[in-house]
Image (cartoon, rainbow, N blue to C red):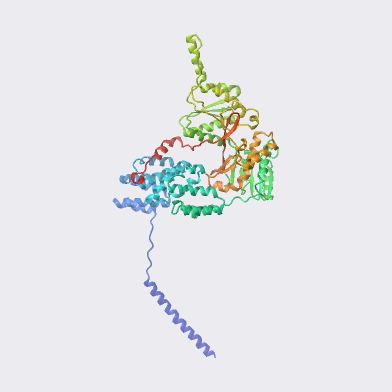
Length: 637
């Protein structure tokens, strides 16, 4: 039996040996009969440039062109600049394309103004579709680098149209055009919605993203509809990756909310006004727990409360001094927050936002309207105190970015000095002196009217409600009757619901910016807001203007929470609030676009006024010239 077992094992061993000696032979034969292709070696931009340096003639030009293309692929902008300069020095026939790629490198290296100047040198010599494409791409890239998407968009859209028509590879263009359109408001996007099919496709997809961000089902459905309508469109690159990424964006899921306000001390009244607005907004939003915490507590007490209550979202503090303290000591570290003011400290977290009723928002809005109207010489009137000086300086500095002539600024110390300041600035006293001199020559009264200077074309008041009611009559009397009436504008400081209830005299024709919450509710389309205002007025009929504004701020702060992530991803997206149209810019600041209103026949009416994002003065001529560059005949046909 044992011999049989041994024999059987030997047999198996023999079979195994036969098997293992045959398989390598087959494998060896297969290996020798099949040859693998050698891998294709891709040279880096630096290697190509090195080869070009050691070459001559047409080979050198070809290698330098390949260097440029590879440098763009690698985003090696310094080498792109170097290769372009080399071509310019030794191969003048390559001048136009080399200059355009050099300017593109400059824009990407953070020198957009130099890029515009460089490309300008050849913009009258463009000969091919590729030249026109790169010229438009350089302009658009440079303006985006300067955070001017409204100026950038038309150039980039023209580049996209050219690339699509002539099958130009546009991988550099599509992402920056997409970012440019994301930064525009729906109203600004509409401006480009009537062009070519390429432009319409870009704009429609950008609008879809703004409208349905945060609503995954609707976003997916609208994106599919867009794809069916615009098959093969260059914006399709954004569908798979970018829109899918947006579909994952979820709002802040705040369950335990802390509202940190001054609930004791001298500013308790301000804190209570914000608290009332927060409570009013809670009717529309569900939180598991809401805690009102006094911002005047010591740091250790605040940290203890935030930890014990497991806070996952915070609103406040309100006072700038407290915000600075919170940021210096990282009291809200790891907690998404809406601070109710600006900060003097650099933003500590991408989850921290700043919501302030900043008057600078109104000044920037007024300036954008003045630019749209073509005003050239504004007169600014403000009280000669810290706020008036700061705001008049802000307006003046912004104005001079876009205009050659500085505005006239008149600061008055008290109500008695108002008339003197106005007559001096309008040069009415000089006119009166001339009349007196003529009467002295002729020894009799001369029928005459005083004249004011004629170069002032708009007046902007940065005065409070009482001061505005004193200034307006002086301006009406002293502005020359020989010229068209100068339009008068004011900030929200000029408007008071309490004073307006008894006194609207002499304000007819005055335009002003204001929180929608502070304007009459007649004709208001939003029924909920109208009912809220009526309920507010019945509960607090005599509340001060500042407390009304803070109520609206508290209400909007809560309303913003579900939209913050979406708003921060889309600078052009906005949300309607009691304090204005609200959007979020890159530094986390929540910017307000206020309503315009006008005093007419002793009543206040909301009006719609146009705005224009201005182009800085130093590049205005360049922008106009670049915008008027015509495509080469081969492109235009």
